[in-house]
Image 1 (cartoon, rainbow, N blue to C red):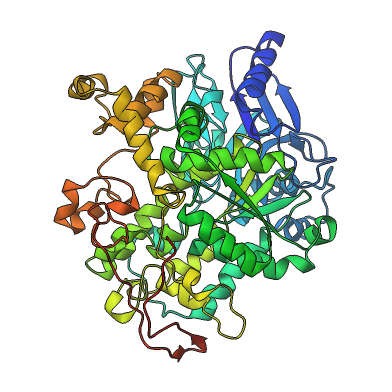
Image 2: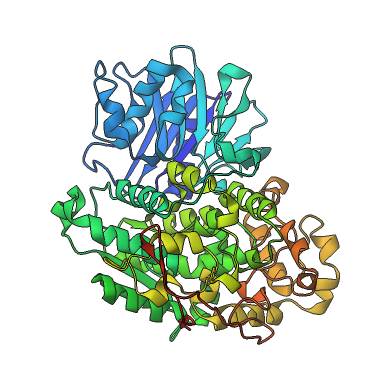
Amino acid sequence: MCGILAVLGCSDDSQAKRVRVLELSRRQLRHRGPDWSGIYQNGFNYLAHQRLAIIDPASGDQPLFNEDKSIVVTVNGEIYNHEELRKGLKNHKFHTGSDCDVIAHLYEEHGENFVDMLDGIFSFVLLDTRDNSFMVARDAVGVTSLYIGWGLDGSLWVSSEMKGLHEDCEHFEAFPPGHLYSSKSGRGFKQWYNPPWFNESVPSTPYEPLAIRSAFEDAVIKRLMTDVPFGVLLSGGLDSSLVASITARHLAGTKAAKRWGPQLHSFCVGLEGSPDLKAGKEVAEYLGTVHHEFHFTVQDGIDAIEDVIYHVETYDVTTIRASTPMFLMSRKIKSLGVKMVLSGEGSDEIFGGYLYFHKAPNKQEFHQETCRKIKALHKYDCLRANKATSAFGLEARVPFLDKEFINTAMSLDPESKMIKPEEGRIEKWVLRRAFDDEERPYLPKHILYRQKEQFSDGVGYSWIDGLKAHAAENVNDKMMSNAAFIFPHNTPLTKEAYYYRMIFERFFPQNSARLTVPGGATVACSTAKAVEWDASWSNNMDPSGRAAIGVHLSAYDGSKVALPLPPHKAIDDIPMMMGQEVVIQT
């Protein structure tokens, strides 16, 4: 992921202002793009860029331009269909081989209505010097991070991270995913991404396993576009294992394989003896990947907490818990010369994979909760995956959040996604079934049917327990009694939350900053609305999957849950695993 910073319509066109913008870009965003720095100035407008070179490393430096350099673009992202788009721009001359080079030319042809033509992840600022107009856009669900702010001098600021603008803006906020902001339309937001599922009405498309399989394979394959070494994050859970399996199957025929070799590299992190390390190693051996295992201790994680909060820019408890091991792993991965990884974020939101979905009362509630979860991804898992990796100049790609795949999966009748243990349907059953192939297995059966582990749990249960103990040593009861007065917005309800909030406020003391972080009741990563599904949850409010008492195999109350599977049979030519209990990796 690159880092972008733009200052538009400010009242200062001096050399000192140019130096200030470039200094901010380098100091606050260079970790995102260590390969090159660029800046463009046109009067009172500045576009700066810190590049992480993934496609065309030799000539794709930014900002990017059209033929006569009247259109200027600074962009963070990957446009997977750029070769197809270039074919429709035959009268245009491209200066680089960068996938993002198409943006300026598409604007020339289509004006601001081209954004939905982009298949990829992106945040960009485009300046049209012919009339000094500009537009800003962010990808469909917010895989890339982006913030917008307003200065007292009338300037508009845009930055990949909050730290790039929080010192200079009177007010700032997260730029909404799936939107663009245009100076031509009264400087307001316009939603460009509005798929059928967005209105949360219940769809009715019948479940076809092969349609899900095909759509997801396409999503993975298109993300193998790279000119640099890459790998996959492999926790041994269903989602990352499927990403790794599909990548391993299709890597051989790609340009990346010709350049870097056909053997896939995989990466896993955890405490010694953790569930993820064990399962990840087994999947790696099954797929034949070159597997890299990284161990950390609870103290290693605690020592990194301040850096994690600074880079990820949140005080949300579950995000910090999960970001820390990912942050540590990303540094190790980058040290090996790898610059891009594929990851499994988004599946749980699309398919209702979190364990609290077991308690969904009906298919309408189930579907509406998945819609809410996808819409909020940019505040949680996308934010974590983007910033925890970008802290070390590593790019994470997430095929589950492919636009076409989301549309396919969210058009399903949600009855097929409902969790029904008595029928052998555990969480994400429709995804598991789609890849349950007896003739050419994608994964070992017990991995394909492994119970959901949230990343912060899977790296080792003692990780969260250790964080809570550390917070209790640093936050006393007297501090908690005053929490509502010290932090009236999103008041921390636990010592762990209070501890993270103190650190966050030290780095980002502005009110605008604290408003960018979500709040509200949650259990096992649910939204506040879903907490209503089970009255007992109100006594056990914790984002860990182990808070799903009566569902998780290692729930906080020590309850044990068996996952029955129905007898073996084949449906729609997709065999199902049956007739025994699944042996869960622990």
